[in-house]
Amino acid sequence: MKVLMINGSSHKSGCTFTALQEAEAALNNEGIETEIFQVPTKPIRDCVACGACRKNGGKCAFGDEDGVNEFIAKAAEADGFIFGTPVYYAHPTGRILSFLDRTFYAGGANFAYKPGAAAASARRSGTTASFDVLNKYFTICNMPVVASSYWNNIHGNAAEEAVQDIEGLQTMRQLGKNMAWLLKCIELGKENGLSHPVPEQKTPTNFIR
Image (cartoon, rainbow, N blue to C red; front, side, top):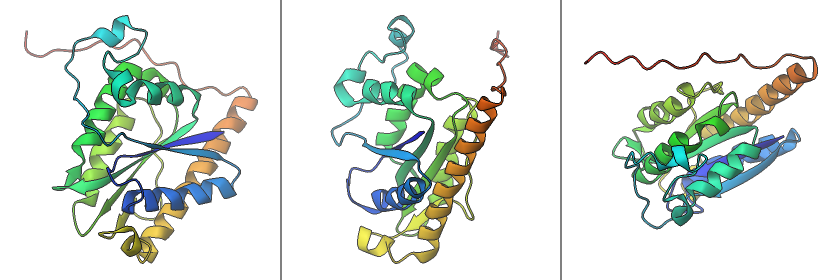
């Protein structure tokens, strides 16, 4: 089993990475393979609703330029996900939002029924708002949401400050343990003939005709 983690910060070894590393260590201790995927630091375009991904087999038309298609391919082989972001003006980075908008629109089938979790880092405030935004990707895609002993937040303005947030680190470790537990439960269910529900064909309802 493997958990694919995403660092939505432009700082490859900053606070967000520190939080993900703590969850990663807990997952590894439970025998779960992990990979931290760094969102490219160059500008990432947002989704322009061109619809090309519907014709390209779930690949974004621009996804070869900035790692979106690479991540979609990796998601197909992963069993769970943790998305990490720093807080910018009380919300996730525009970088990770543009990346995930295109990723889920083009490759949402690769995430369905796989556990997901969000993690946010901030100097002071805005973590719960950012946490809420990232969770919405999971809850529109039939993904079980993994919780911890507190909201999945860590505080610090630099990595050396984040490691001083003892409760934040504990929260990340518990998140890793809970993710591992749920993955093992799902695997055990599969071994005993229990598969995930078959979703109904979606019928979009438009109230403005």
